[in-house]
Structures are given as C-alpha cells and as structure tokens.
Image 1 (spheres, rainbow, N blue to C red):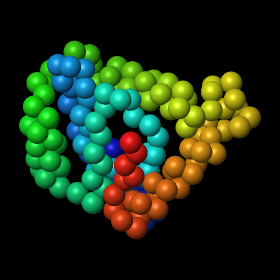
Image 2 (image 1 turned 90 degrees about the vertical axis):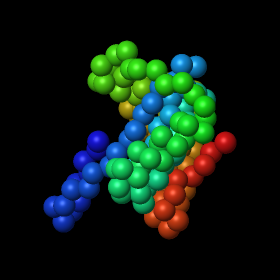
Image 3 (image 1 turned 45 degrees about the vertical axis):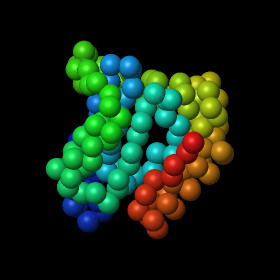
Image 4 (image 1 turned 60 degrees about the horizontal axis):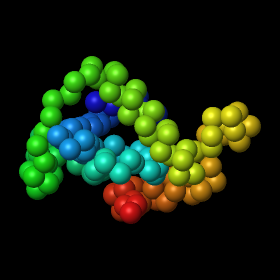
Length: 138
C-alpha cells in the first residue's frame, strides 16, 4: 500500500500486488498513477492500471494474469523490507546500466535522472494524465 497525499488534505491509497514464481519471475500489478517510466528487469512482468481503484478488482486482474501465464507461485522467503530494498537496488542497477539514471558519482552534479530518462518520465506523465495508462516499453 502506498498513501499519496493531495494538496487538499485528502489521501489516496494505491496498491501494488507482487507474486514470485518458481522460474524466478516477478509479476506486479499496481494502480499507481504516478510515473515510473524507467526500465524493469527482464524477469519482471509489470502491469499498471491507474484508473482501477478497487482492490478486489485489481487482485482479480493480478490473479488472472498469473493464471494465464501458467506459472507456479512461490512463497516469499525474506521479510517485506528486505524484498523492497533488494528490488530497489535491482531497479537502480538496471536503470543505471540502461542510461535512465546517472551513475552514483555523477548524481551530485548532474542529478539522478538523465535527459533521456526525463523525456521518458514526461511521456509517462502525458500517457497517465490523458489516456489513463502507462507507457509500454518493449
């Protein structure tokens, strides 16, 4: 769960459902409406549904994706905080290698996101705001 505050004082709740499979894949279904626009590792299968506000419908969609894949689910073997931290490190590594993020020594002077990365974020914001869907990058 992610709680996102608004200027009006209201708070929106967004969900990210994650499942791991026996072949090492990670299936993620979320309803976050904030842009990501970065790269996901090849074994991550992410679907973003920003207009789907119902947790039960989001969970049904997530389960349907898993069922269609025919994958066998595996239980999480580490605590949630460790999983989140290792996922963040993996995302940082992938996005630095693919040019979305500057390398750590460059971040102090140049910022974290490269010009190419900023362009991808702009496209993602546009897609989310006007079409209600995230970009699909192949």
